[in-house]
Length: 150
Image (cartoon, rainbow, N blue to C red; front, side, top):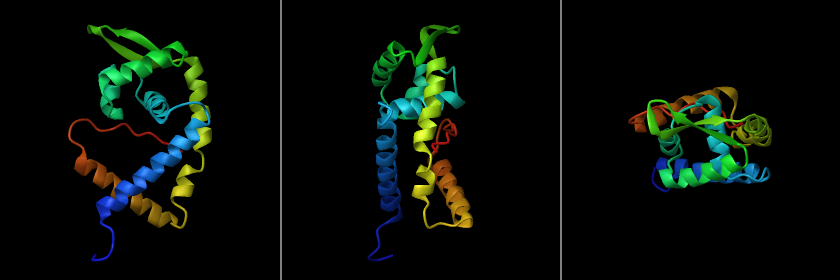
Protein backbone atom coordinates (compact mmCIF):
# COMPACT_ATOMS: atom_id res chain seq x y z
CA UNK A 1 0.00 0.00 0.00
CA UNK A 2 3.04 2.24 -0.29
CA UNK A 3 2.22 5.54 -1.97
CA UNK A 4 -1.50 5.19 -1.25
CA UNK A 5 -3.41 6.94 1.49
CA UNK A 6 -4.26 4.75 4.45
CA UNK A 7 -7.77 3.34 4.84
CA UNK A 8 -8.41 5.19 8.13
CA UNK A 9 -7.44 8.47 6.44
CA UNK A 10 -9.62 7.79 3.40
CA UNK A 11 -12.60 6.85 5.56
CA UNK A 12 -12.12 9.87 7.82
CA UNK A 13 -11.73 12.30 4.92
CA UNK A 14 -14.73 10.82 3.10
CA UNK A 15 -16.74 11.23 6.29
CA UNK A 16 -15.62 14.86 6.55
CA UNK A 17 -16.72 15.56 2.98
CA UNK A 18 -20.05 13.79 3.53
CA UNK A 19 -20.66 15.88 6.68
CA UNK A 20 -19.89 19.02 4.68
CA UNK A 21 -22.44 18.03 1.99
CA UNK A 22 -25.01 17.11 4.68
CA UNK A 23 -24.43 20.46 6.45
CA UNK A 24 -24.85 22.44 3.23
CA UNK A 25 -28.13 20.72 2.43
CA UNK A 26 -29.75 21.19 5.84
CA UNK A 27 -28.49 24.77 6.07
CA UNK A 28 -30.94 25.59 3.25
CA UNK A 29 -33.69 24.88 5.83
CA UNK A 30 -32.12 27.25 8.34
CA UNK A 31 -30.91 24.38 10.52
CA UNK A 32 -27.57 23.20 11.79
CA UNK A 33 -26.48 19.66 11.07
CA UNK A 34 -26.74 18.82 14.77
CA UNK A 35 -30.37 19.99 14.86
CA UNK A 36 -31.21 17.96 11.76
CA UNK A 37 -29.45 14.89 13.14
CA UNK A 38 -31.31 15.21 16.44
CA UNK A 39 -34.66 15.35 14.65
CA UNK A 40 -33.78 12.32 12.51
CA UNK A 41 -32.64 10.37 15.59
CA UNK A 42 -35.76 11.38 17.51
CA UNK A 43 -37.89 10.07 14.66
CA UNK A 44 -36.55 6.56 15.27
CA UNK A 45 -35.78 6.82 18.99
CA UNK A 46 -38.22 9.22 20.56
CA UNK A 47 -38.68 9.61 24.30
CA UNK A 48 -35.16 8.95 25.57
CA UNK A 49 -33.49 11.24 28.09
CA UNK A 50 -31.24 14.07 27.03
CA UNK A 51 -28.10 12.15 28.04
CA UNK A 52 -28.89 9.47 25.47
CA UNK A 53 -29.06 12.03 22.65
CA UNK A 54 -25.88 13.80 23.85
CA UNK A 55 -24.09 10.45 23.67
CA UNK A 56 -25.42 9.59 20.20
CA UNK A 57 -24.61 13.07 18.84
CA UNK A 58 -21.25 13.07 20.64
CA UNK A 59 -21.81 16.49 22.21
CA UNK A 60 -21.45 17.68 25.77
CA UNK A 61 -24.75 17.58 27.66
CA UNK A 62 -24.62 21.35 28.29
CA UNK A 63 -24.22 22.02 24.55
CA UNK A 64 -27.17 19.77 23.80
CA UNK A 65 -29.24 21.51 26.49
CA UNK A 66 -28.63 24.89 24.84
CA UNK A 67 -29.58 23.51 21.43
CA UNK A 68 -32.72 21.89 22.85
CA UNK A 69 -33.63 25.18 24.56
CA UNK A 70 -33.57 26.93 21.16
CA UNK A 71 -35.44 24.11 19.43
CA UNK A 72 -38.07 24.03 22.17
CA UNK A 73 -38.58 27.81 21.83
CA UNK A 74 -39.04 27.26 18.08
CA UNK A 75 -41.68 24.58 18.75
CA UNK A 76 -39.54 21.72 17.38
CA UNK A 77 -38.91 19.71 20.54
CA UNK A 78 -41.05 18.93 23.54
CA UNK A 79 -39.48 18.14 26.91
CA UNK A 80 -41.39 15.93 29.32
CA UNK A 81 -40.38 15.00 32.83
CA UNK A 82 -38.92 11.54 33.20
CA UNK A 83 -41.33 9.66 35.51
CA UNK A 84 -38.43 7.61 36.90
CA UNK A 85 -36.12 10.61 37.57
CA UNK A 86 -37.56 14.03 38.35
CA UNK A 87 -34.25 15.71 37.42
CA UNK A 88 -34.24 14.24 33.90
CA UNK A 89 -36.15 15.20 30.78
CA UNK A 90 -37.31 13.01 27.93
CA UNK A 91 -37.46 14.46 24.41
CA UNK A 92 -40.31 14.24 21.94
CA UNK A 93 -41.08 15.58 18.50
CA UNK A 94 -43.85 18.09 17.90
CA UNK A 95 -46.26 18.25 14.97
CA UNK A 96 -44.14 21.08 13.58
CA UNK A 97 -40.92 19.06 13.78
CA UNK A 98 -42.56 16.05 12.12
CA UNK A 99 -43.33 18.26 9.12
CA UNK A 100 -39.78 19.62 9.19
CA UNK A 101 -38.34 16.10 9.17
CA UNK A 102 -40.06 15.54 5.83
CA UNK A 103 -38.36 18.69 4.55
CA UNK A 104 -35.00 17.49 5.93
CA UNK A 105 -35.42 14.16 4.15
CA UNK A 106 -36.41 15.96 0.93
CA UNK A 107 -33.33 18.18 1.01
CA UNK A 108 -31.14 15.13 1.62
CA UNK A 109 -32.63 13.23 -1.32
CA UNK A 110 -29.89 12.30 -3.69
CA UNK A 111 -27.07 12.63 -1.15
CA UNK A 112 -26.57 8.86 -1.04
CA UNK A 113 -26.63 8.58 -4.83
CA UNK A 114 -24.16 11.47 -5.13
CA UNK A 115 -21.90 9.78 -2.60
CA UNK A 116 -22.08 6.39 -4.33
CA UNK A 117 -21.83 7.53 -7.96
CA UNK A 118 -19.79 4.99 -9.91
CA UNK A 119 -20.62 2.04 -7.65
CA UNK A 120 -23.01 -0.65 -8.86
CA UNK A 121 -25.61 -2.28 -6.59
CA UNK A 122 -23.31 -5.13 -5.56
CA UNK A 123 -20.53 -2.69 -4.64
CA UNK A 124 -23.00 -0.53 -2.69
CA UNK A 125 -24.25 -3.56 -0.75
CA UNK A 126 -20.68 -4.70 -0.06
CA UNK A 127 -19.71 -1.21 1.14
CA UNK A 128 -22.72 -1.05 3.46
CA UNK A 129 -21.76 -4.41 4.95
CA UNK A 130 -18.13 -3.37 5.42
CA UNK A 131 -19.08 -0.07 7.03
CA UNK A 132 -21.45 -1.87 9.39
CA UNK A 133 -18.61 -4.22 10.37
CA UNK A 134 -16.34 -1.24 11.06
CA UNK A 135 -19.10 0.45 13.09
CA UNK A 136 -19.63 -2.70 15.16
CA UNK A 137 -15.86 -3.05 15.67
CA UNK A 138 -15.78 0.40 17.27
CA UNK A 139 -19.07 0.19 19.17
CA UNK A 140 -18.64 -0.29 22.87
CA UNK A 141 -21.79 0.54 24.81
CA UNK A 142 -25.06 1.12 23.01
CA UNK A 143 -25.73 0.54 19.35
CA UNK A 144 -26.40 3.76 17.46
CA UNK A 145 -29.95 3.84 16.14
CA UNK A 146 -30.24 3.44 12.41
CA UNK A 147 -31.05 6.73 10.73
CA UNK A 148 -31.59 6.99 7.02
CA UNK A 149 -30.02 10.29 5.92
CA UNK A 150 -31.23 10.29 2.38
